[in-house]
Length: 179
Image 1 (cartoon, rainbow, N blue to C red):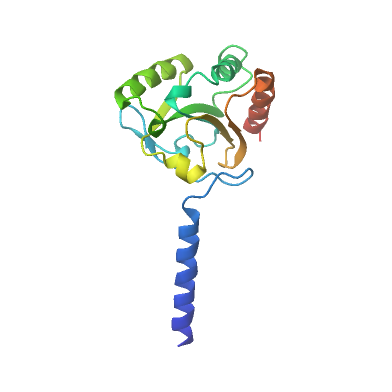
Image 2 (cartoon, one colour):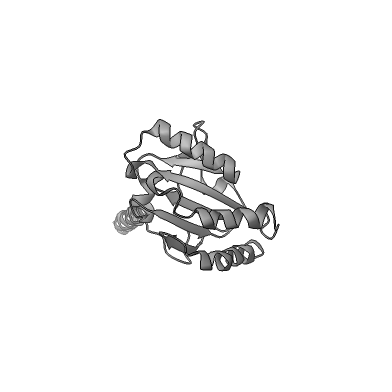
């Protein structure tokens, strides 16, 4: 009888724990909940597609795609020109929030393709607003999330990043790549 009660109690706690993990919002210092999205070629990616790298994840409403262009230009300069940000330990990427726009998916993929070429990066598509639900990302916005090599959330920037903060954020990313 005790075994049965223990088994039922354990099963209840396990199910509660698993259920409680879905929809976990981002918290600084905590592990970011995993995701799986595809690129324009339908190839699947997760955060673990880039093991050992600090990730800059841009979660973007296509209507706001230019909002943090100055920040991304500064990151590109740090990686390609100044070489202060090492691509062996860093990956910047975009995830398009397709649910937040009126634009058709074909147009979104076209715009994303141009951005992917400009920034030499990967752009993925969140057709069902998964990160709005699971990470608490705002709708109709541009959010930048920095996760370390262990996938712990180190910074979240919602909306426009002031250009005066660009170098400070890049310095933080550089420091994370050296941890």
